[in-house]
Image (tube, rainbow over all chains, first blue to last red; front, side, top):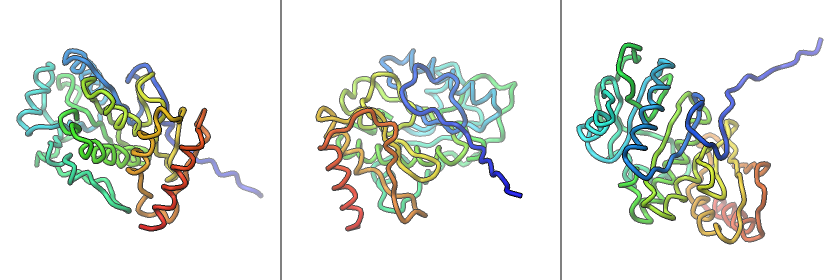
Length: 132
Length: 129
């Protein structure tokens, strides 16, 4: 008897989109903003979606861990449980890659967060991952 | 991300990083939103085009990763974005475990002969590495 193999995979969003809302677990989205208010609003919304899904959260950017944490708090978000990646890990030397390179990011915060809990205030992500 | 993409060298490095992240998210459970400021001007395109999902009207083409290791191209590639396309290609590397690199052009709406020649030159350069 002939067997039919069915491969179940995650459907990624590919192409131009109007909003970051509704993105799935394996989506890689880019946003360009003009002012900090817009930035913080979208960041909060994105991170909130991650929290609601029970994902681990990460926030990468230029500056030290303290500066990243402050940036989150200015958006009325808590940095509790957030996984930070700072400028040093995103520098040209760190990002330059030859053939066969793998993506590696150094954690700037030694504290690996537990899984987010729903009672936490909204926010704290830029990455949302089931396992980081 | 804006502060680390001020110079052309930084832009190329971050574009490379973006493609590695793009490939990672195509195969692993990681959702990422990268943000840049408008003040970067044309430099934004260099980083934006390396994402699978982008805002409407921000880049004429996209380079994205498929979960089978292939590299997808989407949109329209003509003379107006030739330089950006060539710079984007320079940041694309075969996956570590893949002996070949396949480009999926099924989502391309238009591509001119210059871009095809750029793809050919890119393939030749890979053989020399």
